[in-house]
Every structure is written in structure tokens, then in C-alpha cells.
Image (cartoon, rainbow, N blue to C red; front, side, top):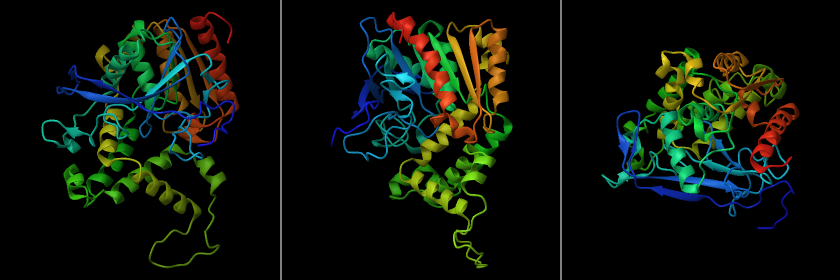
Length: 388
């Protein structure tokens, strides 16, 4: 592979695997006797092990957050490559950046596609439901494995932002800063409803076989494709879709056929997204992680008082929202900010104008990147002892 990467790229990276043999007790009442976590790292850990940053991924994300795999497509870097690298907002010249594929995932960490040691078959639907708190506890073990006592920052968007918030509550002395981006204190009934429709699309696919489709050599393609199409609509905004597609017909005029083939550009786009997703994601994992998302509610252990939960935190917070995000609207981020203020925590808040909807947290929007960079320069100064 040629080394003609941009100067701000982390270049070629390789996933690593950490294996854990100490049982992990889960909130559902079950435990994993042993498990593996796949992760990637970028940059170098300083002598004090004080400059580590954890990136937490969202529902369909994974550990490959920046750079390129040696056997991969050079046109497809990690999912947040625009934000991570030397000189980028999350500067790998200053920070040791870690991202893992969460338990229950389908990109190498132990999940439904992994072999159940008790049956010697894939776990499938027998894999236990995991919570955000379970993820945080497993990530803490990964930190121990890497020799990291305290994270300089934990950063995530969407479901990743929820993990960043939970980390500050569960392990307050292990997080200096928590960056919560395009997130919410818990899901609304509408968001749970979207997740349920997506799950029903998968569950009703004839090829689902009660989650044991691996044994039949099939994939519930139609159900997973529809689930992704529905989800993708919620990640975009009306104004963004109108600007990108309008009401454009692919052929220019209606065909008036009863076969319901793709006529509008947006239909073609959604079907493409759905088909591509089926080729890279697992249906059981999708079912599991949407439930993880539904169950997230850090205030539940504190009599539904989020401020009381956040009062445990010792971290400084940056909360970021996007004006056109209707899935996790700015009002939900302001709820987090309000309760951080009530809890007496240090918090900065940025509401970024954008037409990209919920997916804006993945985009290189100048104001957004400037806000991240400004905040993290201060963090780098704290942990490295100089101006970044």
C-alpha cells in the first residue's frame, strides 16, 4: 500500500484484541465467563499515561475510527477520520486515542456472532442483553489492560455520548473530561418507537429463524435493510434531504407502474444504504444494541434525578448539539446542561447550526471542529504540561 496519505492522517492501523478471562457480571443478571474486545490505538501514550482519550462509538459504529486498514479501501478511512489525527481536533500528536468495538458488536468483540463456549455454536439470540453501564465496565477493564488509570477525555456522539456521560458517573475518578455530543439523557417514547419498528422488520423476516439464521446459512436481509432505511431517515433532517434529493425523479417523469420500483432519487439512496448495511452488520447485533439504547437511563438509579447522578462526576463537560438534529434535539442536550449546572459541575455548551440532522456529529463542520479543538487544547495542556 502506498504511503501517500495526507499529513494529518494516522496512516495504516491494525486492530488489536484483548482477551479477558475474569467473568463480567451484567446488569441483566447473567455474566460472560470470558470475552474479547477488539480495539485500535493512535498516537503515543506519554510517560505518565495521562494523555489517553477514549472514543465511544454509536449504534452501528466500531473500533475503526481513523486511518486505513492495510487491506482496505483507501477511499474509506475510519468513521471519524476527519476529526482524529495529527493537527486535527482530536490531535494524535498530543493524545493517545483508543476506540474499541463494544461487547455485543459484530466487528470482532464478543457478541452474537462469536462462538458460545458452552454450545460451540454462535451465540445468536442467546447472547445476553448488555447495557451502557456494562459497556463502561468492560471499557474500564480495557483501560486497565492498557495501563490507563484515568482518561484525559472520553468522547462520543449519539450512543457514544451516552457512554461518555455514564463513564463520568460510574467511574468519576477515572475521567478528567467528558465530551457528550448529539446525545440525550434517555430516549423519548418516539425514539423507542422507531427502534421497535426497526426490530419488528428484522424479527418478521422469514430468514430470521428466531435469531438462529447462522445455522441455516442465511441472513434476514430484507428485515435488516428496512431497519437501516428507517434508521437512516431519522439520522437526516428534512432540510438536508430536501437539499440533497428534493423530489427528483430518476427518469424525469412518473412511470405509473404498479411494481413500486425506485422512481425518486431518495428512494434509490435509501435502498443503497440499506443494501450496504446488510453486507457489513449483523441483525442480532442490531436488535441487541437498539435495546441497549432504549434502556439507557442514568437517572434511574437516583430516583429519576439526573442532577443527583451527575453530582457524582468529577469531570469537566463539553456538550454539543446540532440545530437540525430532531432525533436527539438540542433541547435534550440542554436538559443535560441544566442538570450539570444543578449538580455544580463545570460545563460548556455549543449548539452548532447544521442541516445534516443527527449525522452532523460525523461531519467536518468548521464551528463544530473549532469547538472540539479549543476544548481539547486545554485538555492537552493539562495532561502534557504545555500549550498544544
